[in-house]
Image (tube, rainbow, N blue to C red; front, side, top):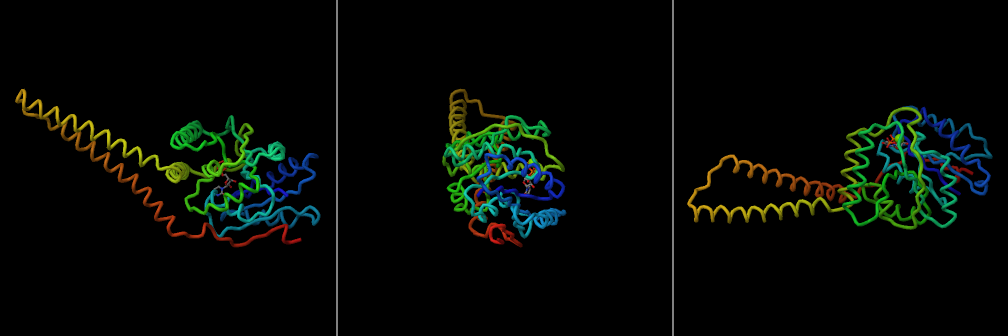
Length: 317
Ligand code: UDP
Ligand code: MG
């Protein structure tokens, strides 16, 4: 049994298209020995997503019942929607896929083949992205590179959440209960036998990206801050360098005054130094603050999400 996990937020217009593509992709003969479950995690959609899913469930014939869904109590974001799904599957493997058909369902067959060969985390790496702005591609590229440079754990570059996860990976992900989740980083962190397949990322089938720039920047910052303490180290190193340089500079000024008795003048250089140091200090305090804020949020130990309604094909039968 393999679960196709689909986090959805305001995707009412894309779902039937997605189901068609999935159905035909999974109808392949090689996959006949598996039974599939589509698990929609409705992440507090404000449009008709819920009704569309419900309709799809109702129109299923009894013999081919395969759609499950989880209705979250509000919009928690894709990261939380994914763990809500993972928490509630009992299958042998899960394939996480976006609802907007940017991840081609046809790849699932290849993923399963690699899974049969013993790989536990088969992820899809995009070699091109259609229909996305230059800025988005560029910022995403920078982000992955920075994340990689700031940690010793190998990060899968240009890889999204589209992947097949074995039961062992699912158990590992279930163990991690941090609120500030960056699932991409977690996939790397848990380890296990990974294998990549490459694909060309399509443009969205319908609608716009549900993630705006603010969310993307937050996600990126979260990713780095919740994954490494590298920024703290940068502020430490900067502080160290600045103190060294200022010490040398101070000795130079004292010597200059003693030897040539030229009293230092220079309001301009002074104010520059003060502002520069003030800026550095504020930056360091800001970085500290980011981490303290994270500690604050994590110490509350709130549940990650609340489920309003859950419908399972397995338990219904
Ligand atoms: N999504 C979600 N909750 C959110 C935002 C997005 O479950 O708060 C889902 C969305 O419905 C889609 C997937 O996450 O299935 C990826 O979202 P999107 O296509 O907007 O992101 P992008 O492809 O631009 O990174
Ligand atoms: Mg998308």
